[in-house]
Structures are given as structure tokens and as C-alpha cells.
Amino acid sequence: MITIGLIIDIESLRRGHGMTQRLHIHGLDVAKSLAELIALDIAPGTGIEPDQFWKGLATALQELAPRNRALLQRRDELQRLIDSYYAKRRDAGEDLADVDALEHFLKEIGYLEPETTATVVTENVDAEIALVAGPQLVVPVLNARYALNAANARWGSLYDALYGSDVISELHGAEKGSSYNPIRGQKVVEYVAAQLNEILPLKSGKHEDVVAYSIDETQGVKLIIKLADGSTTAFADKNAFVGHHQEQVILCRHHGLHLELHIDPQSPIGQHHPAGLKDVVMEAALTTIQDCEDSVAAVDADDKVEVYRQWLGLMQGNLSDRFEKSGKIIERQLASDRYYVDVNGDTLKLSGRSLMLVRNVGHLMTTDAVMLDGQPIPEGILDAFMTSFAAVHDVKNLGRYQNSKTGSVYIVKPK
Image (tube, rainbow, N blue to C red):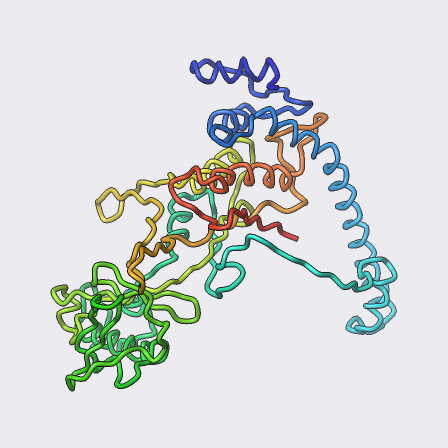
């Protein structure tokens, strides 16, 4: 049960009245703002009462906080021994790079332990972690704009990426400039065609020879590729064509990664392409680490609350940010899922966002957001409890979108 003091304070919050700076809950002194976040924002809908959470945290801290301190003391002891080892060898004129001597010493002090055979079996792991390789971003979770940008980097325009980078030379009239340069644009189109020949080779012909990508649904769903000589062809890999969206977006797959061919002969770019190809949009950042550690400055309880609130917003799918750019107010939100008709005529849904992991603070830092016996608790333990509790909204599919399709929470714990 929730303690009487906590009930009173929750009711005070709901009525908008003031409350004490800290609440005493199951032997813990908890910052008001953190208790409020749990009671009013994180716990509702999860099936986990605030009292259950605090009781569990208190129990874990009673066991783990002393162990955490002991391990840090042991680390300090090992570091002193290693510093002394190098100092003595330096003073004696001995070789500091003697690997055999160093290995013997590290085993002697218990820094290196005998290797053992270990077998790890994992379940419910998303494909982005277990099966498919791709870029991973790390972004400060405290900055909503950056956090959203990173989460939305799952899909990106290859045309835009090439046009704005030095992959395409600016020589011979192909400067980026302040407005669209058709010479540079043509170089982008040529570069992309060459890339498509590598990743989506045709049975005959080249992508630069294509004059039409069209969908035929007379028998199933098929992609018909027409060449300039009037012949038709298909992808060399029969599994490369996955589906389409309103016949204007052709969904393809290569090594488990998807890319879209966007067809619009009337668009400013597409009208200059023989097949009306206005863009190629590719899966890019498959995963993003929302960082609570290195890239974040969270120095007090209120800062920690904002960190956890941002992560909660990502798990609930309702995080947004408004900012001004070029004189206009822009509101950024998480990208929607993407829908297609697959080769069997069924609906196919792909995530519009990268799979998000959350990085906790390491074992060294402490936080006064929660106090135990008058002392700040290990911040990494609080991070583990708070970020996993917030992620229950995703595990139970309570939010707007699904982060993990397998019901998992991915927490990065620094060494």
C-alpha cells in the first residue's frame, strides 16, 4: 500500500497545492518532483502502483548500494596497485611495455581472472539488434529536438544526403549554392543509378536505362521495369521487390534493409528523370541510444526528472518539440509508421523510427534525487529502475507507437 504521507501528497498535487521538498517512502527520502513524476505520469496505466515501485527500489538499494560502494573501493584499490606497479618499474628502469610481466602482475592482483566458457541465450530480441546491421546514433535524451531527430533518422533521402555532402564534387559547375543546381542534381541522379545497379541489379539493362517502374496487380503484385529499348525486365533477385504504396513508392530490400523508390514524373526532380524517379529513401539509423550519461548534464533531482520525462515521452510516443527555424514555428514529433501493399496484396507495416535504447549513468555517480540513510544513492541504479518503469508503456503497447516489436527494453549500462 502507498503510505499515508504519499497519498496526502498525491492528492495535494492533484489539487494544485504545495508539498514538502521530500517524501519519506519505504525508508527513502524522495525528491518531490520525482515522486510526482512516478505517481502522476509513469505509473498510471502500467498496472504497477507507485508504492510497489518505491518498495522495490528500497529493497534493491538495501542490497545493491553497499555492493556498489564495495566494488568502487575495490576498483580504487586495483588502480592504486597498477599505478604503483608502473612507478616501481619506471624507477627501476624496467621495460614498461613488457606484456608478459604486466599480464602476470594483473593476474596476481586479481585484475585478470581465468577465462571460463560461457553460453548466453537471448530471447525476444528485435531484428535491429539480432539480425540486421546498420548505423547507430547516440543523442542526449534531455534535448527533445535532438532526441526526436535521432529517432526519426530511421529513414532518409539518399538524394538529399548526396546533394549536400562532398560525395558529389562541386567541380565543373556542380556547386551546392544557395538554390537548386540542376547540374549538381544530375550528378546525384547518375550516382544513385550506379548505386542501384550494385544493390538492386536488373536481370537485363541498367537503372539509367529505365523509363518506367510500374505495378502490375493482375496476378498478385509485381513490379514491371521498362527499359528505353521497349523491353521489360525485373530485379535479378526475385525477393528484392517487397511491395508498394499507392504505386508511387516502390519498396525494395537488400541485405535485410529497405529502400523506397519514389516515383512522381510531375515533381521538379522527377520530371527530369526518364522514369520519373524523384527520390530514393533508405533505411539509415536502425538504432538510437537515448543517452542519460555522457552527453547529458543532469546535476540535481529536477534535472533527473526531466531526463526521465523525455524518455517517457519517447516510450509513450507523445514527445514533441516546437522551435523557430527561418522565421517559422516548427513542431517536431516522432515519425509515423510506414504502410505498403506487399507482394501478396496484404498490408505491410514498417517502423518509421529507429529502435531506441537508453543508456544509464555508470556505477560511479550518485544522485540526491533519492536519499538512503541520509546519503545519495547510486545514480545508475535509479536510472535502471526509472527508465525500465517508463518503458513499461512500450512493453504493454500503451503508447502511440511501438518501439520494441518483441516486448523488450534495451538498457545500455556503461562499464
